[in-house]
Image 1 (cartoon, rainbow, N blue to C red):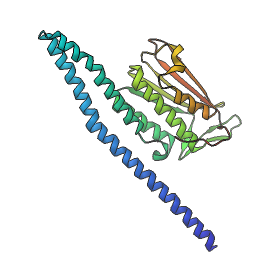
Image 2 (image 1 turned 45 degrees about the horizontal axis):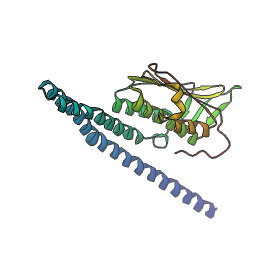
Image 3 (image 1 turned 135 degrees about the horizontal axis):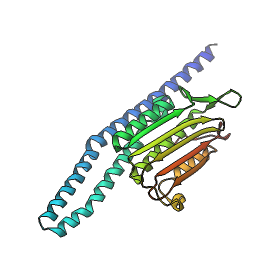
Image 4 (image 1 turned 180 degrees about the horizontal axis):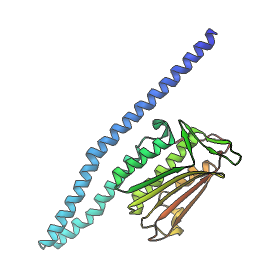
Amino acid sequence: VEAERARASENLELVTASQEERLRAAEQRFRIRREIHDGLAQSLYGLSLNIESIAAQAESSGAVEVGGRLAKLIPVARNALLETRHYMLDLSPMLSEQGDVRSALENLAAEFQNISDIEVDLNITNLNIDGEQVAGPGDAGEQISLQPEVATQICRIIQEALANVLRHSGASKVTVNMEHRPTGITVSIEDNGKGFDSANVSGGFGLGHIASRAEELGGKFEVITSDGAGTRILIELPPQPPQKEVTAK
């Protein structure tokens, strides 16, 4: 009995140490994200506005060549700001730091909207979320649960999709839907941006990681888009992941 108590105590200490380590890491990421927002991001935003203003003044005063050169720096400054906001999004807390999928996604949506000024419509339907478990009724009324690692992967998929919206879409609104169906979990991320030629889906726009994560979960990945028509990313996952270890990256 004493040996069992000792093992239980040791296991508890290990769990506590692991939780404390995750908390320290989360606090550090929060500090870094805050410093980027209050420092670098604000500076880049101010720089972008100043370049635009000076370029306009130069051209209006007759210094057309100088104004033209300055104008070429405007997209450089804007892209630097977009990259900075992308890094801030990467530092957003995920499932292991939030406790459940709903909290993680709600905070991610709020953070994304704050740093991007892109409206986010988040809908989680037919899912009962409790702690580290995601569950929904199956065909015969049974409960279908997802491993915490799988739930984390889903959060990462949505995070990376939002990062793509920020970087490439030029959208003003993005809609995120997560729904349980008898066939499994469906996740869609749809924006009202500029879209792109669907022939380029496999070649870029940062979609490779999303496709890899969906494949690792035994799911299907599809991108529906065309020039000027926005983009919809659709992921369909089975009720249960493949019988192999899923790494929450």
